[in-house]
Amino acid sequence: MEKKYGVLWDMDGVIVDTKELHYKTWAEILPDYGIPFSRGLFLKTFGMNNADTLAFLLGRPSTPEETNEIAGHKEALFRQSVPGRIKPLPGVIKWIRRLKSWDFRQAIASSAPMANIDILMKELSLHDDFDAIVSGSGLPSKPDPSVFLEAARRIDVSPEKCVVIEDSLAGVEAAKMGGFKCIAVSTTNPASKLSNADLVLASLDLLTEDALMRLLWKDMHR
Image 1 (cartoon, rainbow, N blue to C red):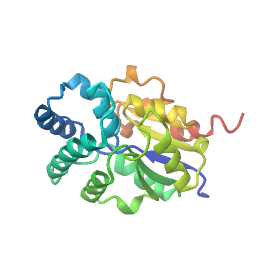
Image 2 (image 1 turned 135 degrees about the vertical axis):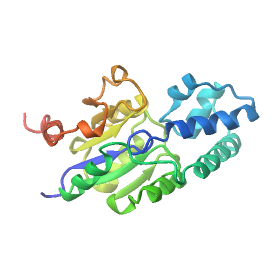
Image 3 (image 1 turned 90 degrees about the horizontal axis):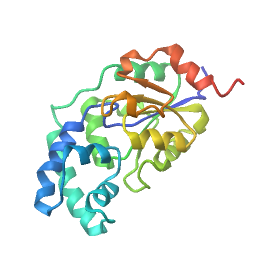
Image 4 (image 1 turned 180 degrees about the vertical axis):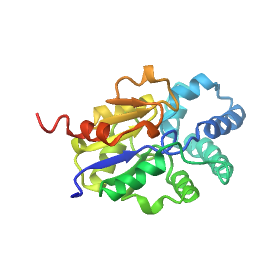
């Protein structure tokens, strides 16, 4: 198959379930800064980059100094917690390797800092399976589609020929705003909240080749 299709993977909640590690590290450090935090607030910000997460929690834009100090503290603690404590979500490795065998171009398109992506990819031995790795930490946060548009540019596949795989509400919205097809997995949010996606699955183990190709072809052969 000619390399004409692309799949853009979010990282946290799609490839690996890091939600609880992120929640615990935020919950550990935010009281030191007097910033209110709860699981409900966490779910509303999961999928955003750190600057936008802090802006949401503070009720105002965070200063660069605040973002560097608070997010830097949190992410260092998160990275310390990763080794030996993560594993890929069901169906992920099967689909990454299957898509690679079909010559699909694949990219990571995550809001996480690059240092986080690197340690997770190293822990899962996945670096060689992707054509591009894009961190959105320096880009406008999801639901802005910038991270997906940049990932599509780097793998040289147009948005209408790409599928985004997401778990967050902001990520699904970003994919649709960017003109991408979107598969949502209900690892972080209930399926009822992910209805804007083109396809919602409880697990990538449930994705079929037929469903994927119908999703890619549905707007191309009218």
